[in-house]
Image (cartoon, rainbow, N blue to C red; front, side, top):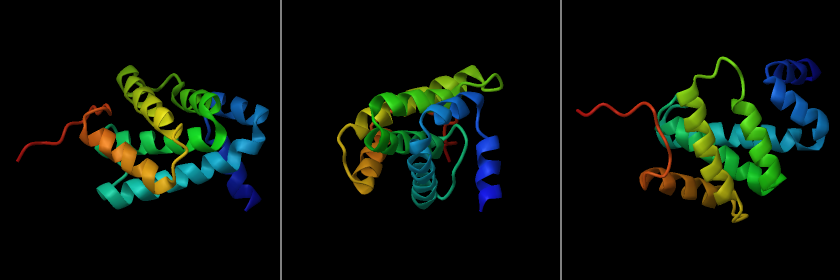
Length: 138
């Protein structure tokens, strides 16, 4: 178990590590919200994709839970650090930061996970989330 946690920490971006050094008490909430977001995304979309609608939803939902659980400022700081690495293409960074901010604002409602998931999905359907990969028309 300890080795697994250490491996997870080593896979974080430098900004995320710096954040957790200053806020170690947030590590569990961040990890749990990530796991819930991945599970819910898979349930709703059948995948946890990249730059598609599932990615947009996942970022929104994870950020919403973080805002509720660790606060607006902390959620904004951590999710921004999550996107801040040299290999992150600019268009992907812009997409993810936008979707994170939508989620963080939704998280201020202090709603349950189910409600936050609903709010993020409704935001997606209303076109408030950014997506790079559009679905191919059949």
